[in-house]
Image (cartoon, rainbow, N blue to C red; front, side, top):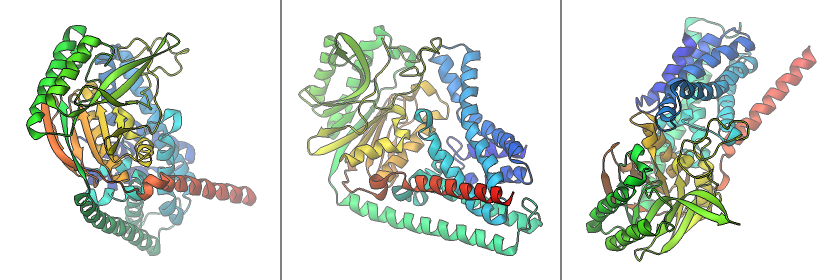
Length: 510
């Protein structure tokens, strides 16, 4: 029950509940449950925490699979449970390694943050990666804390949160007179842990408040662009119906014309806003181009695309940069595709699953880090859940992107917590690279995020919306942009070294 409680507390830290302060002590019940257990039993206890957390965090997957994947309920639930089990496995491994490695109060304070960050980092790339709502993301609304991301990435915040849990737990053990793994927790352990955490937290907070002011000064003296986002709010059931193609396009054009009075430099439409092959479907493409000419601005449009290689079609999820004359300026093809959404992994062995999107064939991936030249500026685009992968935004920023644009279609998720979770992670890409981020979503949440992670403006879910604002374009390169997940890799390396030393020592002792 303690382990399950930790799982529920972790979920409460994330959107939509957004009780971010709970994250700082959410793991304490799990730690209490693990005390004096064997590594094998700890694995199963950790699994309970993971299942409780991820089942309540990504519950919306079953709804998406059933409603838009058109899978039967039992299969949708089975896929949810399979993903939950996979994610919970990391919590189970953490618990097992935690008990094995933390045989004394000293290791109890130093090892858990290292192990936790190491596993989060592995989860970000293993099996194509699924770093959805790492524990550091729970602090997305606390701006002074998340500023450290431009050095350490989101993993630095995860480290600090786990360190907080351990420090509080050690002090609880000392106050109530409990031992850890049969060893006494002394006053030195209690004071040392809480003072170390307080020092680290204080430095992070001080850096954050200074960095916000510093970045705001840089932004105020930088060139800016006036951008508009258009949220068409097209029903997912109608989006790919040929009967509604023309009316969907006309709706986006009508909303875009409302921006004309604000004279935007760029109008951004969401992912697959044009539910046809743009520039190949002559009639509908001309309708879009005429609307662009009438608006008189550059347009950034999400659309499926197709290329033919030796008469074989290759399909892409793309964005097009179109000028006010209707001509194409540039294009980006999505690089990180969604498994079972845009392609079927292990298709040879899993032919019964099919795809959740309606298309002729599997999508192909584009080039990682590809940017689009827009006049004097360079745009880095991320489509849909590409925004949860820090390395993609970083690659674009390294490739001179001054502005990040995320186009997505979150209609799949309905009114669940998923759109809020998705939006919360986008803030970190702005902070890590100190770039303004423009986000256009078909049914929301759309919005503007400044280089400090502050939301300048955002839309409500399932509403027609048009929003225009000026965003700064910075050209600086942060520590994170230059060196990436160096902190997470250091945590992983240090964890492996310490564990290797402990294994060698135990073998020698035996």
